[in-house]
Length: 92
Image (cartoon, rainbow, N blue to C red):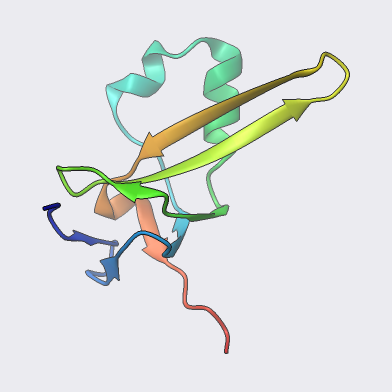
């Protein structure tokens, strides 16, 4: 059973929730190669669907960067802390 996850305002976040990435924190960013760090930081401000919630209650989001010219695709999955995201209410 996973621990409950919440956004910066304490709203519950579940698999399938849409969240806006507000910021990224942690030393792991400094350990990324420059080009990967730029890709990951470019995710800030975008909205993502939560793909999973790990056993520690961290929601995970992912983005891919396809490069059709080179025939490759890179991607990053990121575990978020509550202060790094806000739940996005969907318009009905």
